[in-house]
Image (cartoon, rainbow over all chains, first blue to last red; front, side):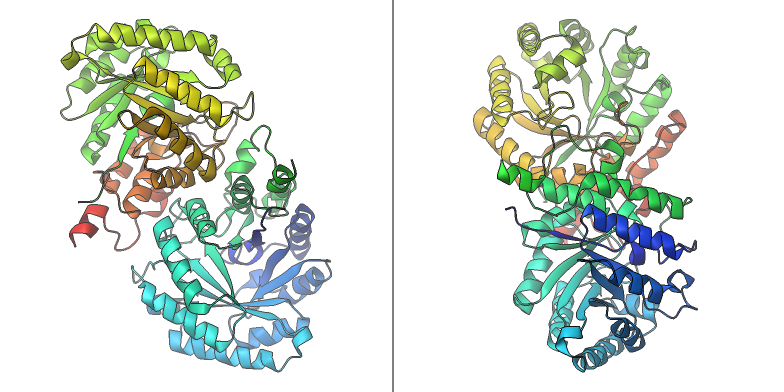
Length: 314
Length: 314
């Protein structure tokens, strides 16, 4: 069997959080089900922000409840604070995703708190989660935004990212995601920083990658991360998630293209690319005015393309 | 000083050869001059095909003559046969680029000859070039198309590519380019095949890469090729050069994004990205109906981005 790479869908959260057009709940569920049918096993389905702040996630409870009814799917959700964690835990989500920016300026801009305050909030969330019986307790993930640079501060020192990873690990998270929030990363930086962080946090914490393709290096960065042992990648169907401040720039790395890369490199994703590409129709219907990205969807699979597991078996 | 990577512009040949809109000669020259002003040192300016076949290159002689007047520019041109080589040599081009497909089916389809006939033609071209005094003799490059797979035959065996490289080296070419003509390549295949071919042809022949971004792995493939020592890359401004059989699929890898990757990885390209991005306006004017690609052009450079040489000096 080929080694497994988990491609996690974040289009329903990061992909649409900056889009004004509210995706109807039924279409969100159709989107989730189409990806699950294609083999996707981990989907961030919503954000537990206050509904007044982001109407896009006013249906967070319903989407979560219905997603939790889908067998074999890991249902994840973003939570901005303890209140969000309580909402998610009450529903029984499998993983709660928190974000703190390593760049002080970015964190202040993004959540109007210092990084110290954000880390203190994470501590409170971790303590709250410990009060839940282990078998019902959501896993806790912390994303370290702007780990590879920041539109406000520019360079973000690797030492600072490693220090944040250590603090977050000490708080007791189950998973850490290094995020190239604004597409400043490159394969060298990816290799260096993931290697350093893995060494700092040990082997028991999942270390995931959350990349954006803002400057065209997204897929090259995935290849570099795979090289140094990363096996969990966030991605967005159709590459949704563009930055409102960079018109025309792509958003999250494209789920379809990440799956194609991983399978071409000999890793099993468990995902059927034809079915995944077919799921794009739902996004197109839901968001007719958004630019959709993704090269495999346009060009199709190479003639004679065999999935990694099929090649291993042959 | 940072190590040098040469990014070669092929947009004026591969980029526009399938585009019906004929680019006016003056705009071609403006395009060439804008890239030279940005620091590009090697441009394939035309193809010496019969003008009746491709009206796009009816001005090949004039474009070549005027390009040769630009100081410090290496002027290259594609030639399909001995007749084209004679036209190019008469003008005094610096490099003549020939192409044979490794896939028999692709070669038959592309130039209506067997690969054996194409290799015999290359032999005749090489013999003709030897009759020219060394100081006036154009360098001879042979591109091996479909080295990473073929839309007609699917898989192309690495052994066959290595054998072609050996035959072409024995004929006496100065440079070989491994071409991922249809975007079937992936970082593993790139690393393996470039390493094998380099070993087979020795150190005295330039080994260049010619990649297309058809399935989104183009920049990842460049990073992989850089890893195994490749330092010469063909690319196309705005990513022109899409395949007429894959609507919406991108074409050649984007010059701007390749330069950004190389500089981010610590290599000096000698190219100013702002000036290169500004040159896109000429393409936009010349080809208003074509889709233009390229992420750096849309998102801009990262805040605080320093070119490789500047970082080395700091």
